[in-house]
Length: 323
Image 1 (tube, rainbow, N blue to C red):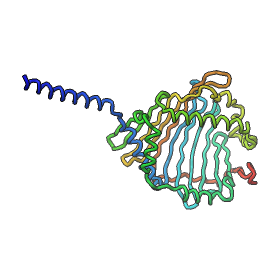
Image 2: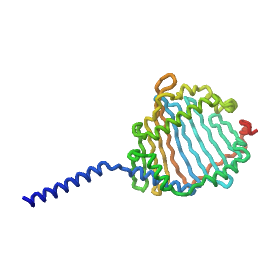
Image 3: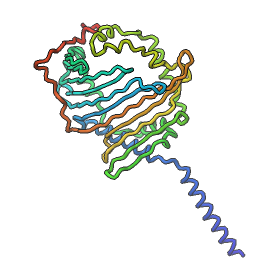
Image 4: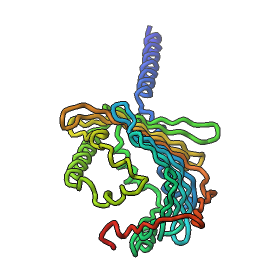
């Protein structure tokens, strides 16, 4: 009988240990996605210097109460040069039914060519950065460079700020060594400290908008260009309501894909906010964007040839007090 009791005790202990272990594992947070996210942050923090050229494709849209207010997409080619950056880009957008297409070219810090493809017009923008723009860019490159990895203190702060949101990250590993990391967060999951920070930022932005000029003086001159004509008649306050009451972030989604070296390949994001305007009318605003990076260190931007074209000169210095 004594032996039987011993076996019962041993069996009970094993069963209890098994149950405890299973329960513990069942409630252990799955942080694989979050850990993968941090590894990407560390890797890209170290690899910023390695990118000398790249091609970026992107799109962006804003929807208010189920109706698309803005839909845009574009492509940019960027490369480093001794005197700045070489850039070429094509972009299209439709804002409340008004469609526009344009191209931009820049080969130094002195001038930018803008091509209004909607009206087949050519512009050259000069003095857009001021006399010391080159010096500011050089200082910024030197002073802003940060090649070190994330410190333990910074990592601990990130862990604290993210909190239980670690469980909202997931990772999908692909056969070629790449992986897709997704953070999917609903309003109820956003930690209180982050919600308070967002409320404070939204309040500060609202105060700033109230103290800002309704229409900048520069806009009166800019809207004379054919590219902007038709846009000035859009009632932005009506189409983009200012949410002043019961503001809430309903949903946030961030997804990005990295290669086997944790280098960013594409990113996609969505955010949905809700609230009421001054009249108490409820609104929902959805913002979506996506972009992908290709041709790393193998991209050559397109070069604009002004020969034989009728080009209008725009002196940016005359739009402010630098002139």
